Image (tube, rainbow, N blue to C red; front, side):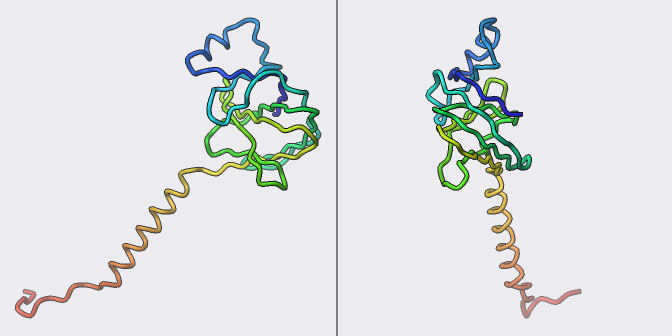
Length: 155
């Protein structure tokens, strides 16, 4: 699911439980984001109207309209491998993990479509290790078996 919110609070990991226990907290309109370098500035945001949504689990998209900057919480578990972009542009949108472990996305004003994509950051490392292993294996095969020395004989 997708949930637009009107307020974003940046909280630390130390304060998250106290904030979630607060009876005044309304998670239907407030997203609690764990502070990180790509977190939104926080404060009151404009309303977001979701027009359409689709895509796959690894690459969902959402079309929306917002008069001013907005914020969206997606029912997808946050991971560093997720990125959010405006469709048709190279612009990456700010994301942050919410208090409930979901993805929060800061939305620019206007009528836009965003696409989220998941790329496991460990795939590049695994690919590099595989290629290095293959290269060493081929090198060892190309060297061939060492020839036996003239003085040695098999029994």
